[in-house]
Image (cartoon, rainbow, N blue to C red):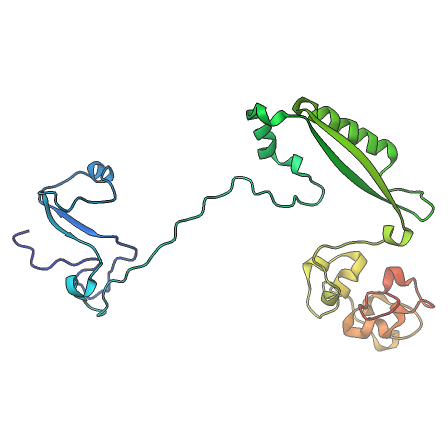
Length: 261
């Protein structure tokens, strides 16, 4: 300390711009060397009256205690927020096809806490889609009962009773619908390939995701749906691929603006 005339905090005298990048809460200088393990055991609050401390300073009065160097800026005080405690299992709506009972953290809680095993009754409903006449259901009655019995056996040790109700929706048109997640109708045929719409039912994004062969002019609007012309670039074969008198529009019409789509 006798030979130290200037104390540089966070930088040195070199012209290479080598500086400390981070946060410093305060500066404490002791009159003797201390080990790294000893410093780690120290509390966050330093006793400034300790006689072995040679100097103690924080950044409460930066303009009075600290002189700027190089960049001409004083240290600034930044309040860092306390990080929020991470939730082990956030009780958000479960993904499609799952229930809260599929959450392993919930099941583990039942295993570790016997007081949670009080009698409970869970009511759940299965929505089954079928044709207009009730035939060809998505899930058969035997499959529903088999799954229900498996759930009863799985949750019986936890004193949980399951009540099942089945709601059948008879709608042939709805049953034939195909759902592509995140594929909005405006993305089909927008002259750029959207991977979420790249499916045969959409004509591979209205032709945007296909590298088709050449579409000759004499093939367009010739009364035949030519698939090499069935894209927005050729106006979907000039309408032939969305004409119910020419083709099966359920399989070939990819024009999002067509009323026959």
